[in-house]
Image (cartoon, rainbow, N blue to C red; front, top):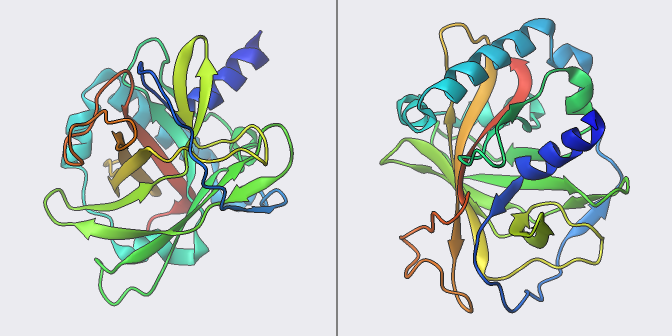
Length: 253
């Protein structure tokens, strides 16, 4: 039972749910595949990392995570690309009690998740444009889908690095419509009317010595299914707005 619950938690951790009727699956099929990415080294995630993550999770889980995101400091270009970092999910806040919040508790759990975010580019300054490549597992296989890179830019109004990920797939979980980054099969195609909008800042706490990102994600819809009545008005239907904590497991400079 514990193993089944854990699998369900991982699915929810990278899924965004909407109670809407969905029509017209996308036909875009671009995407590369590679074998499972190398696991992070033990040196990248020490015992203090998980202690700090747990403290951060408890503070955000018991408080106002939206306020925490607003108060987080801007993350610099060099922090995102430093040391060829691969950023991984270490905590998730769904905003819905039904789906729950979670955080990683040990290195084995992180090693078992091949999903990564990789920032690349030249940092002429701390607000330079970057490219974000995402890698996600394909079902129960050892294959990993490598999505084409998207552009990340520094958003001046809330001091965040921002990017849009159109690489979503449609699923049904317990009767709910779910948009997830993880395809079940290598032949699955992205939907074309939903985009995941990301805004990331540095999740700094006085006790944190490791690098953490706090990212606010919102689903946007467009034709053929209009769920926003305009690109600048996000839908907040059923879990469409979530927060994730990413980390590369390395000490902050």
